[in-house]
Length: 207
Ligand SMILES: Cc1cc2nc3c(=O)[nH]c(=O)nc-3n(C[C@H](O)[C@H](O)[C@H](O)COP(=O)(O)O)c2cc1C
Image 1: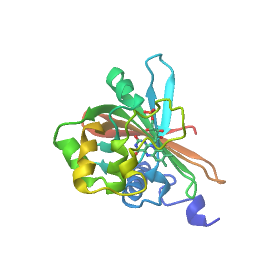
Image 2 (image 1 turned 30 degrees about the horizontal axis):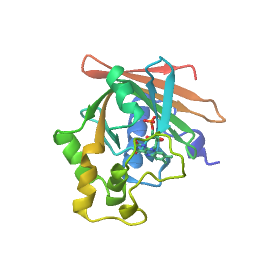
Image 3 (image 1 turned 60 degrees about the horizontal axis):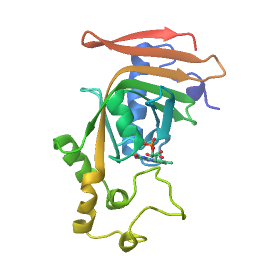
């Protein structure tokens, strides 16, 4: 294990930790193979119990503290967010042994510029998923992809893909807290950044 990995330059530097956290989020956004591409999003269910699932990180904008995700407007997470917009995104990089948790408030976008921009950026294979005839999690008497037969195994033309647009939703999260945890044989580190009064307030925590 390299010394750089055990005690990185930000090991004892809160400001540098914040920067390192943002760099990991950029890698997740820009590199489909990076583990930060696939965080777990936790919501609160209507019964008050937690719900969690993996979801692809589509964009992150640090100035506005915005994260963008894509989903099926018929999925359970939509009504959960409508009932309670508080969510956590949990990221883990096994190579750097870093866990990052973003806490924020989410909103659903289906018919506005945010949603249109998200749809425009979605790949054709991703858009095809919104043609599924049943809602995610619907029971089926047979094994199924949920896709109609005419699009099964192929990427249909744009005109056909557009028929799924009504099932598409973009989730916007405005995050207000970043919890960073780093595991090291030299001693773990944990830090929290809370956005208050227009700026990030940082503190170390016992890991
Ligand atoms: C690697 C991976 C990536 C996924 N990406 C997404 C995604 O970007 N959006 C999404 O809605 N679901 C995605 N899913 C599926 C979700 O984990 C989940 O099963 C689905 O959204 C239904 O969740 P819900 O019933 O809690 O709403 C992904 C699953 C895996 C394993």
